[in-house]
Amino acid sequence: MNIFVGSLPFSLKESELKEYFEEYGEVASVKIISDKFSGRSKGFGFIEMPNDDNAKKAIEELNGAEIDGRAIVVNKAEERKEGERRGGFSGGGNRGGGGGYNKGGNSGGGYNRGGSNDRRSGGSEGGYRSNY
Image 1 (tube, rainbow, N blue to C red):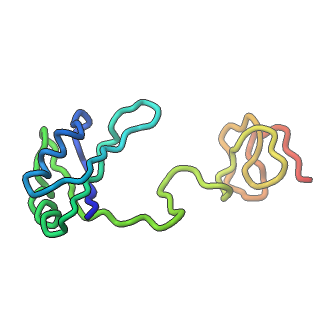
Image 2: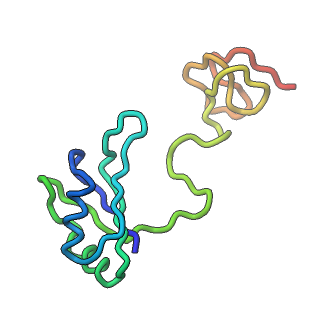
Image 3: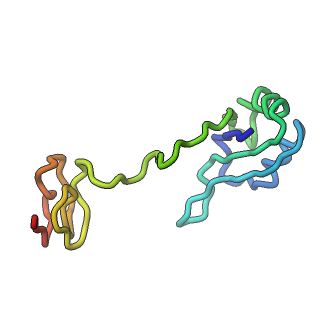
């Protein structure tokens, strides 16, 4: 079973997190998610436990447990559907902005500051925009 663990202390290491879950059974993998630019922990991660009964027991007993003064959140991780993303930037939409030498579309063009929520406009200060 794949388990989501949130509200982790930013200084917690994967090996330390693994120790908490090993008290309930075998842990196949531990992954604390980190920021790709800074390398700093994002404060959540995933644990994989091969035995579902052990995983359920760990979820039940560790949800709300305190680690380094923080109450952690532990629950069953939901599988992400193919192509699903949460947050971040999507292609298109009504964000305005964008950048560079945009030829059409709704995303504006070069040197945009602020953008626009009107899908028909290219943003407030876009440059080099053409709708061929």
